[in-house]
Image (cartoon, rainbow, N blue to C red; front, side, top):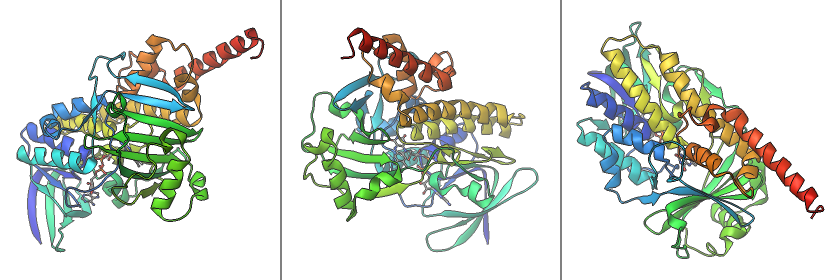
Length: 420
Ligand code: FAD
């Protein structure tokens, strides 16, 4: 079997793989990316956060993305029973980007992979990692299979696994662990959004509370096409039957905020169904490898954290790999796992607070404190590593305390108003 050599093998050419590959390549090491699919390929995850733009910038991939003319995203709008809570990324606690983009992932991921190739990194498409053998010194021999079924071996000093839902290293080495979040389901489609409102609508994601534990995303793209998805407990979807199109039309008809606007619009493709995506792994690194992006932990789509966690984990891991290749001893637990868990756990508190309605109480409260709103806005912008922000530092308690204060205040007002 043919054998080739590289310094670093990156598995997957999604946002995680491309950012990691670019950062290691920039430091002068030989990088090889192996990608199972032919690009462009569909993947869900279309609403980016400002923090993600910093990772793309450091990887030298920002220009490739900007050239695509994607829809600028300047905030997030939450809606419940017609009441709107609007967050604008220009009004936040943490210094950082005030916008991100809403992207069709097939085009976004292709732009990243092409940008990486333009930096001189070979990307082998339609090539699947099927086996890995690690040596005692952390170097490895990986078996890859191309579209024609030809096998090759790749020797690498280090592997970065950015294989997303493929979860290559956790699967090959039995590291997968169930998530502590309950399983959820999504039904989504792209529509020809002929009735879109042009005032503030296209430049933000709209998240609609459909039921306390079911929500809807509306993500407009620059092309006039909009992504719409329902997410919730799988049992909720059981009352909808028929073809995927019939199920989606039934869901849309039952949500007053979008029913009129999306009645009878053309679907660009047949609606897709996804279920039980939350997963994690026993460890984020090992002798000769690191996991980045979705392979580490994916929580829930509600705050659009996926691509940000993917790119930031790769930004951090890529730099650590470079330091290790230069001969430094890296404390991976402290410098990688603990840092990543800071961000992941902050988002986890917000995801849990969303589904137990703590965040509904906060988002839809009257007279919101503008300083607190800025702090929460920074989390929604992806700045979940800014521990100067009390709503990051005390993510597990701050939201609950705030919701309790709001409920107490509302009860006192209710009593003062004679229970009206
Ligand atoms: P991926 O994008 O999955 O890329 C991994 C790549 O690895 C793929 O191209 C795959 O083909 C390749 N690969 C897999 N196995 C192998 C193999 N054996 N050999 C070689 N290559 C391989 N995130 C957001 O930021 N915003 C959102 O609005 C959002 N919405 C979401 C909605 C839903 C319903 C779900 C389920 C997720 C959503 N996400 C969202 C999350 C987002 O999809 C992921 O977090 C993101 O795609 C992770 O990027 P990644 O690079 O880690 O993995």
